[in-house]
Image 1 (cartoon, one colour):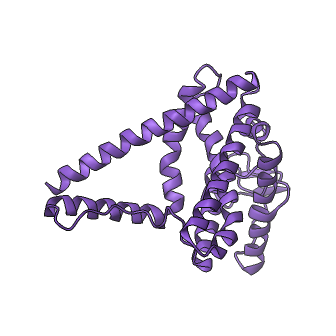
Image 2 (tube, one colour):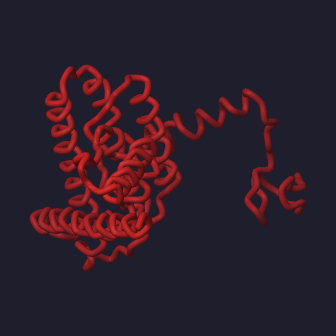
Image 3 (cartoon, helix red, strand yellow):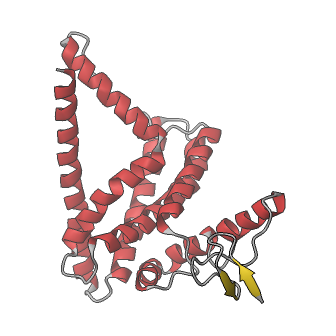
Amino acid sequence: MVTTCKNCNKKFIGHYCNYCGQPANTHDINFKYLWHELQHGIFHIDKGIIHTSKELFTRPGHTIKEYISGKRVKHFKPVAYIIILSTIYVLLAHLLHVKTNFDKMSVVLDGNNKAQANEIVHLINSSVKWLQEHYAYTLLMLLPVISLASYLAFRKSRYNYIQHLVLNCYIAGQRMIVFILFLPIIALCSSNEAVSVVENIETLIWVSLMTWTYIQFFDNNKILKNIRLTIISYVLFGILFLVLLIIAILTVALFVR
C-alpha cells in the first residue's frame, strides 16, 4: 500500500518513510496518545528508564559499551536520562522538604570587610543558589569536565572524548538514582550531622558504582590498573574543577571592580 508521508509529502511503501523516517501511521494528539508515549518512552520495559536503570545497576560498564558500539534500541538516551532523573530528584526533594549540605552551602564574610569583597561574595552565593536550584543543569555543566578527566586518565583506551561523555552521562544518571533512593532517609534526619553521615554513605556507594563501571567498561585493562586510573580521573577532575572555580571567582571579581 502506497502512503503519502505527512512530514515530507513523499510517497512510500511500508511502515516508515524511506526519505525522512516518519511512521506511516500517526495518531491523533489526545489523552490516549499521551498515555501511550508515556508508557513507551519512560516505562516501556524494552527501552525505557526502568530497563536502562536495571542494566546500570547489574552490568553498568558492559551495557554502556554496548550502547556506544551501536546496540541502542533498548536503552534510554543518555542526556534525556539525566534530565528526567534530575527533575525527579528536584521534585522529590521539594515535596519532602529535603535540604542537603550542598543546598546549605554558602560563602560568608565578616561584616567589617570591604563593600567590594561583600559584593563578590554575594555574586558567588547567587551563583551557588542557582546551581542548587537547577541540579540538572549543574550536572550537565560538570559532565564535560568529568569526561575530560576520565578521557585524560584513560587516554590510552580506544574511546574518544564524546564517547567518554556518553559514559559519564550514564554514570551521572546512576548517581542520581542513588540520590533519589536516599532522599526519604535524609528527610527523616533530625540533624546536620545525621545528614552528613547519610551523604557520606551516598558518596561511598556512587564512587564504588563508578569504579565498578569503569572496571567493566575498560575491561581490556587489568582491574588494579583500572582502579588506579579511576583514582587519577578523580584527582584530575578535582584539579580541573578548582581551576575553573578560580577562573570564575576572578571573573566575578573583575566584573564588580
